Length: 222
Image 1 (cartoon, rainbow, N blue to C red):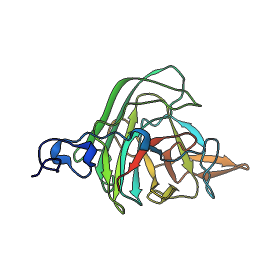
Image 2 (image 1 turned 135 degrees about the horizontal axis):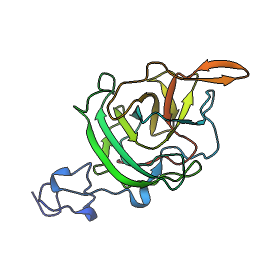
Image 3 (image 1 turned 180 degrees about the vertical axis):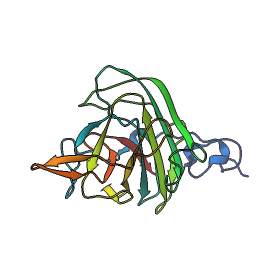
């Protein structure tokens, strides 16, 4: 390899070498000023679906993200009840779907294990460190994520979007409705909850990370 080229054993950021185009040189990656929010519309609800911050003590959430552009996911923050609580928070990922892997850690990669996360409460994010390894996704790819905490987790819920369908979307990615998981790689809740709307009990079809605040960060990789 020539100087300032990928493969020379030295990561040359001035020559535009990054994690996604030159992993062999051990290039680190941080979004820096290029970071974008997954979804940033505080106080709004998802169009044509019932999606509200709703307190559920469910321990974990599995869902998928579909990339519409080449992206790098660098951080996923949480939303927990009870401001000031010290919480244990873990994040895993695997390529494709989580279906069939709800009860097994096999095939999952741990991206975060923080035992002293301080809950931001109902109206603020629980800020977490950047993922130990950024998740690089090409346009059209799907990636599963599993968020687990021993504190009270807050979700967005939908009575119209089934599991696996796009819950929220923008030009770069879609978050698909997922499932609640009991304990750390425990069983999936088959009996989804319901919510009362105009006096009628309406079943909740899917769950997703709360959309009321900035939830995660990513960068375009092209």
